[in-house]
Length: 332
Image (cartoon, rainbow, N blue to C red; front, side):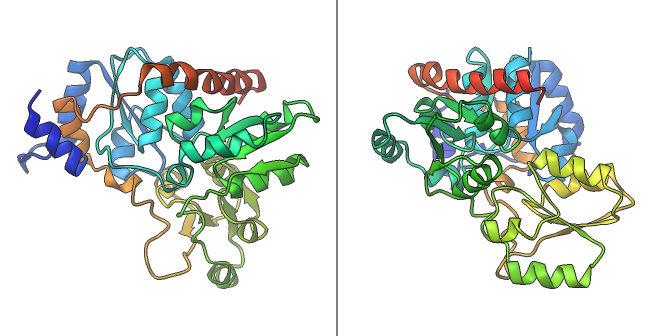
């Protein structure tokens, strides 16, 4: 392998080369997928072009389920690093590519595994449930992994006397504790996108759109969740907008999901909830590092590749598999 290319990827996070501006990237990507027996899995927070070219679009649970069952030789993960790691853990014999390896996650960064290990040691009789938005190393320290789709049900599936550590997201953990009535020990982590929503600005927006339903992801702070007409996972929010007769929705999660909402309900209006400053902070800067051009070069070159050490794969697969098994049992 070309050393210069690897150095460039380490520095920039992606393969950079000239692309003929007349190329139809959609057609080229389709051609490469067939040649390489590749599948593109994309998260709802990716840019619209990537969502439109993907073989499967979903939230963390759906993407994990898809990664576990695909028969493709190559998984191209249009998402962030921990998602590609999860795909590699579930399909270790497959090649897993990520268009930009610097597509990280503020929530995963908020829980360094070496610190969490010490935190866990303080509670030796507690079972560890970690939100999927974390590193492979953190999953390896867990008993069960969960997503926002199944977190409540997973906690409820455990005996009431079972003591639980929940990490890394304190807002999702607090929401789960409230919904289940369980006393959870929470790690103090958070997602910068979901923490940025402004209660004051949302209140004013609701006043301007009195008929609009306000919907929010459980990673948002409690003060925002209390205002919501519906709280749910990314897929849950999408399903709610399809089934609810309302014509306007104020959406408190990463704005990428609005593309799917508009495709499913072209007659409805979707308004991104405003952040507490003037930046576009309800766009995840990590998710948006991936572009159609990077996706094309990634499949073409078979780089950047995401790998996970074998001992981590072995340890991390058990809690992820436990999540998938519980979800299957509960019909999620």
